[in-house]
Image (tube, rainbow, N blue to C red; front, side):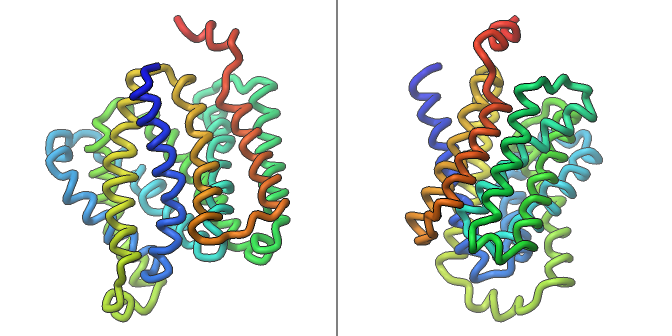
Length: 289
């Protein structure tokens, strides 16, 4: 693997890990669903040139926009209001065992004892993480983030079934379809829109710029190119850096506590996810052809 490509991949993990901290600060100023509606609308406008070049399978893309663009972020960002960003980024890692379980059910993939053990370990880590005093006081927020992680896993199955599609076009269409879903839900559920929009500050503006350009356009653009160039078993282990960066960012920038329950639970979750995504040398050689 080239050093420059490895550097870019690690930079993407840093961007994604810090996105939880950025979002946490931004949605303190603006209701979460309204924030996401604005983010999606701007994203669709920016990516429109790519969207017009690929306008096929939009029915399947709309279904992805419901699970990933709307429900995943609606539950995830609402849950983020009640827990620390460092906790949220760790809980979101349950998307990996959820995705592995769905792949077994939908695609009849063989799970194996090692991956099954990794799934069990990851969920034990979640249980330990809920013992953290701040997390234990917000069970609904924890539940919402776990639902968001499951919905991400559902969307990954949908994307796999969709097949090859330009990532910028896919992100653009998902944003275009999800924006009105978020806006309608925000108007029905959330309140204080006029006051929040009037008092929009630098945190919201920075959050929008960061999530649109750094996370979506740069992050996913580099990551999809990386996946096309290298084997999956070379790429997936790098995603383990995301929760590490997210945990550190929450502690450094938001002064979130580093309790032993939080750190130990985080380590157990990472160990479980690692057992799922990391292949043994023999398995890697067998998969190479």
